[in-house]
Image 1 (spheres, rainbow, N blue to C red):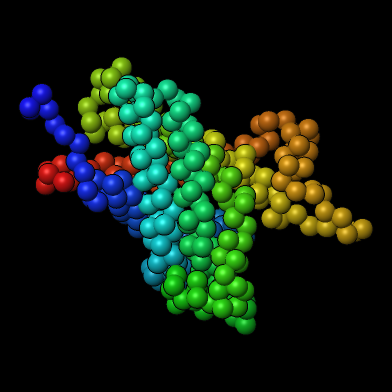
Image 2: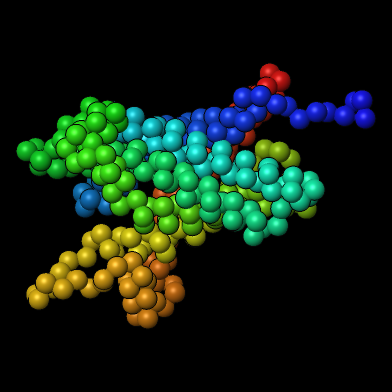
Length: 298
């Protein structure tokens, strides 16, 4: 009993999951930001990936690929800090309640749902700032807001539109985040157990394999919600002024009736390429951060 390790107590063990989560998300964003910037321009109808890349380099130089980076980093510092930290705290508590045994998949999924909701609520203002900053350069000159950084964007949004406008459209965002994080977080932990214990892979191979599975399921679980959100955002009234959908549930019901369940997965390969790389890089960076901490005894 004398040599039994006591659990660490204090501030650092409590905040460590949050700090590690935020840091890994921010590092992943620095790598993925150029891809994300091209994706936004494509969605705004500026051409193919090759055309967008060529025009950005020609007109604005390399710096154009990192426009909005401050908002992206702020989003990770809020959203990913909250979701990964919350998920790790919840799963640790659940494992304690389960007498130290691995959690069944449904409990991991519930922890992921909760963590996603908390993370999206906390990160919604930064997400809004990121979208506004990325889209600003595509607007006509007289309509541009000319945000200098994420904090300037947040200040202007509050000053011009009020504090509650920071959570504009947060409802669909939270629902999508719950689905994405259920797929991403639960599948990663489950995959680590499978690849490490059942397949016998080494640490590095396990992290890469599990993060790939996590990226796939993050995309698979969230695309139906993203599809409905996109349909609602882009719908136009007909000649009589009536919109095709009354809301998200109506859109989902009509889509299911007209196109079946696979209609929600229209464009899945492209969507997976958008979502999976950031998920994978987040897990890989998190693993490296944890290894670094262990080497310093933290």
